[in-house]
Image (cartoon, rainbow, N blue to C red):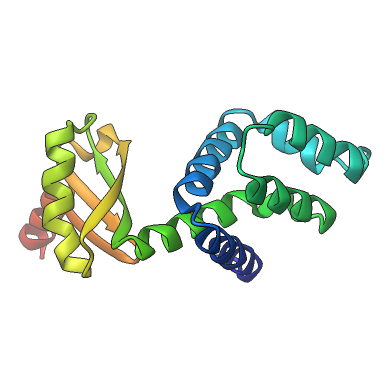
Length: 176
């Protein structure tokens, strides 16, 4: 994680918490991250050196007219400081700070298929206790190469109960 992104995220988190707008800012940042991931042209446009900062800020203000002002202002600041490449990292760090403040942690669950709501709830209940949280905010990533089972990543903690990893362990045991 970039130190710069961490500082911006902490400042945005403090501002959102003081304004009692953690949920709104968090939601806006999730939508912004999705937009940046699905339209790389937008990121390229906002990083283009030939477009003035004022023009970029005007575009951001128009596109995000319904977003929380703190999110728009953060983007304006990142444009001024020529740090638009940090937006996704700022959003990710903010989500982690917001989740921790609400007694939750962010988790990525890798599986061969989309998890049901019931499965998400079971995984959240089982693994949240391991990391000292009340619940997990789960992002499900489909990875067919796992063959079966799940791999859960919570911060630096990884629990791997996939068929692929069990087969690899069995191979190491048999081969020696």
